[in-house]
Length: 190
Image 1 (spheres, one colour):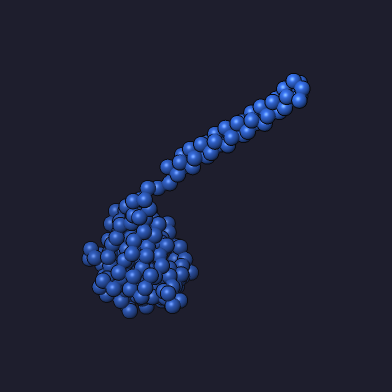
Image 2 (cartoon, rainbow, N blue to C red; image 1 turned 90 degrees about the vertical axis):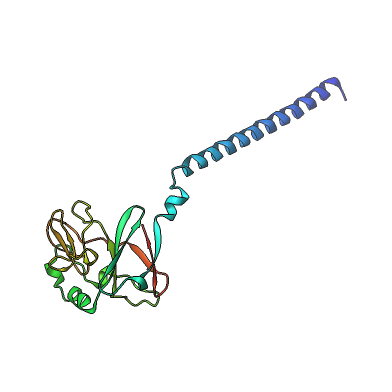
């Protein structure tokens, strides 16, 4: 082999080595940037304790007939009401066309695991849709003129289906996302 042939062969090996080093360095740099980006974006997600606090399983068999319990999920109040047959009948007999925010009683209920509606259990947000106050209900001894909830701050009144009937509130008490885990347990989530 001549000196020039050996020299050009060494240059080709050096060039291949240099290209490999550049590619390897670029790949490592790209991997580092990707790891940093994933960590940076992930830190915007809610913490595990916050995610855990955004859902709650509630045993509805513990709610007395004609009463309600109130729960906090993610710092927000929710009402779980065990309606009497008279309250269910009152909610079903309302002329929906006369309501400010028309919804039937059935539209405000979620199906159980067997697909049937549990008309006795009503779950709604516990914040008045006017200014976010927490209305009083059967647990506090005041159900207003329509048997549901009454917001003493500004006079909004809701019926036994949580629909706005009187006062300044513009909409019904919202129905949260909830599913029946079993016949006696519901999972409410934000």
